[in-house]
Amino acid sequence: MLILLFAVSVIFIKPEFLSGIPEVLVFNGFMIESKFNENDFGLVTPFYILVLIIIFSLLTYAIFGKPKTRKVMPWNNGVSDFDGYTSFSYSSGIRLILKRILKTGNKKSGMETVDIFWFAMIKIARGFRNGARYIGYRIMNSSISYYMVYMIIAFIIIIIIVSL
Image (cartoon, rainbow, N blue to C red):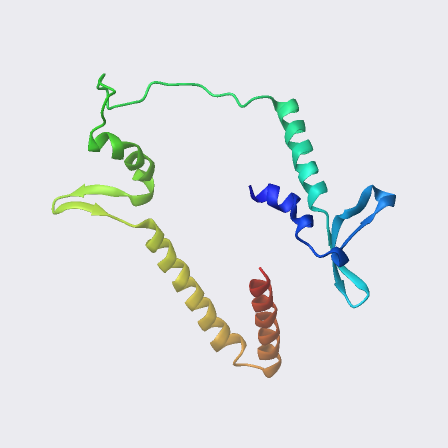
């Protein structure tokens, strides 16, 4: 629906923003211009984008064909009754998938779970803290020029992060 609305969006645009470039087969009324004073700021051709999406979809279908699927019998913990699943059957697949990540194990006091995500996050935070402490006490403490280089690098990194 959104793609169709995008394709017919030229109907809802004011006529002064519609144009075309017949030299490259974009006929008048099929291109939306974004003007700033007398200069063009940007051009969009919704109908041609829709046509390209259709062409590339058909081309992909012609080259690769219909997706191949296969059917398998559902696994219900070895029980032949497939009408209903037990709660263990529902959770068994995800438990097997998360077995390595959650690192569950039986202890004398009960089941113990190690959350590997928090373990990794704490390790990364400690490494970052130690690196920042090293930079602060060893490098930046010795010269103002090192501190200026650090500030420039930090500024560039912040600009890169914000631009993402």
